[in-house]
Length: 170
Image (cartoon, rainbow, N blue to C red; front, side):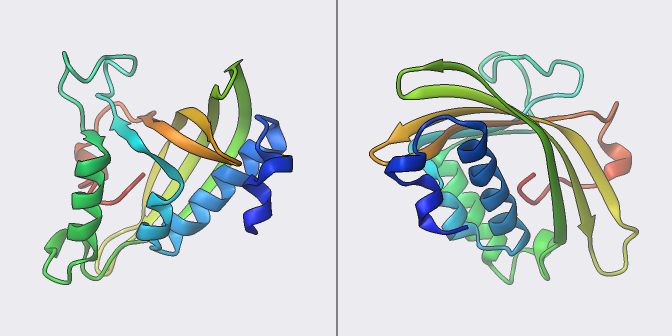
């Protein structure tokens, strides 16, 4: 995706602009371009993977699989890129499929958007794993760009045990 997809003429919360942002995000994550992915987020961004039995829970009152603010996201990415990180070295190969993108609740420079996802994860000496669910995004217009202020990956799985560690970014 070219930068023009999120510049002034596309900084509206149209489905096309949001779709471009989500597809670009998937491309960066699949290519393991984690620092570039961070550039899609606001400085106060949050990333959540809520518990399967409480997908609408508040991270302050429930135990989340992942509940990261921007500082923890940056630390997570440092660890994920570190060759000494046994959970992700060599890193997983992933393929994300994003569908059913909907823009909801537009309010000035903020909006909520949703999308379905399937993430295929491949690791050496392991069977491929499939993570399916939906995303709930809180987006914000920052200058001429659409940015991700919050990203919630809600997994459809009944339990995570058989799926293995979620050491990568869903």
